[in-house]
Amino acid sequence: MSNLSAFFSQNVNSEITEEVVISDRFKDEQGKPIPWKLRSMTEEENEAIRKSAQRKVKEKGMITIDTNSEEYLAKLVVSSVVFPDLKDADLQKSYGVMGSDKLLRKMLLPGEYAALLQKVQSINGFDKDINELVDEVKN
Image (cartoon, rainbow, N blue to C red; front, top):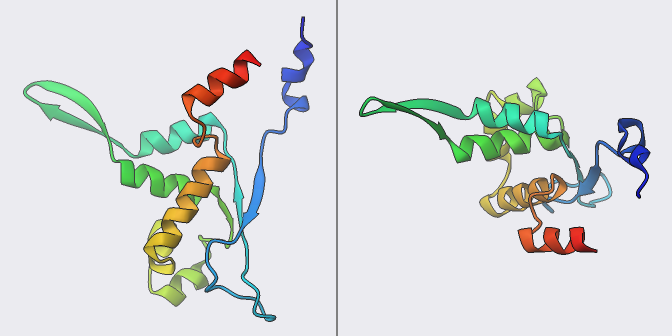
């Protein structure tokens, strides 16, 4: 039998943080790229983000839930970015936008945004193939 106490909240690393260079365009005083700091989140946080991107749609008398995937992913990224502080009013003002998601879209090139999204998905466990998970469970 395995040790059940390993699953107790005080024994689990609940938040993973990682520093990653998203763009070579943001440099420090020495000319080195500045890494962004990302964090993982709980499923509870993820569920709240997902629900905030959902809308009820009424079609032919039926009500269905529609999730705006672009809005969901943007909110997922914003919630995972710790540094730079995307909520900073001066940073938003410097790009002429209001709102963290709009700031990201203005700050980053399309490929940089895609790289950031990929890193956010990875740190939150969305990068594993179901077959990889099955193999991990077997081992």
